[in-house]
Length: 252
Image 1: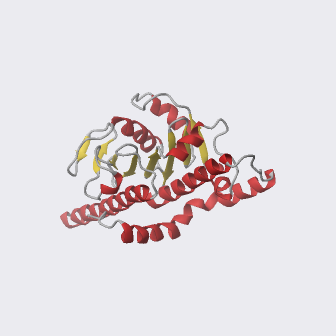
Image 2: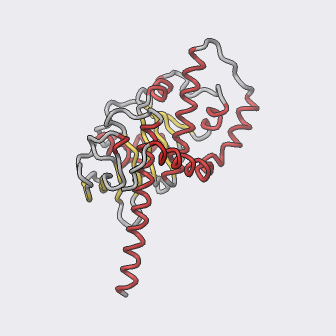
Image 3: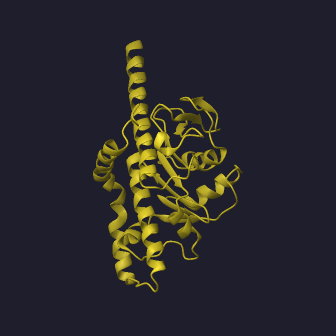
């Protein structure tokens, strides 16, 4: 029996390290694409195993500094279980991420940004517009949550989960963007598409009047977007190769 227990423990430890490595890579990729905000905003991932624990960045490290071992393990109450050096956790980050992890069983990873183009579109009256193929691939996955102030009030978690529903992308009005995935690679892929759609919209609106596709084209693209998360099978190995060439060292 002890051998089986040891094997299970080793398997969970290996699985956790895999998630730690992927999450650390995602942090560095956010920095690479210029979406970070000093030490603010967060990416998180659920720790494999029966406990309700998840990994989040230590409060004070820049995104390009994050490593697998520096990520902080916390429980659903925000209590630090295991810290890799810097043990502080941003309480606002805990509020948002704990809400999603607790409210969505499929939310293995959650990513939230304050990147300027994402914030700009979140503040636009119409939100994300169908101005590009990229945006149209996002629209059917997207929902909205109104701004309530800096996310320090735990009561907001219920409303955030209500607004998120079963969607994989969210505009936090006047605040930023959020994505949810069954894995870190899937979550990052959703994030990339949403941020690219926001960047295109900001540029398009700056150019003057825009051209709108037909309702039929929008609907067709929405139907084609249902497998968007599966693109991670191709995109994630590619961005890891990019990261390994530009900013290696995350897997320590």
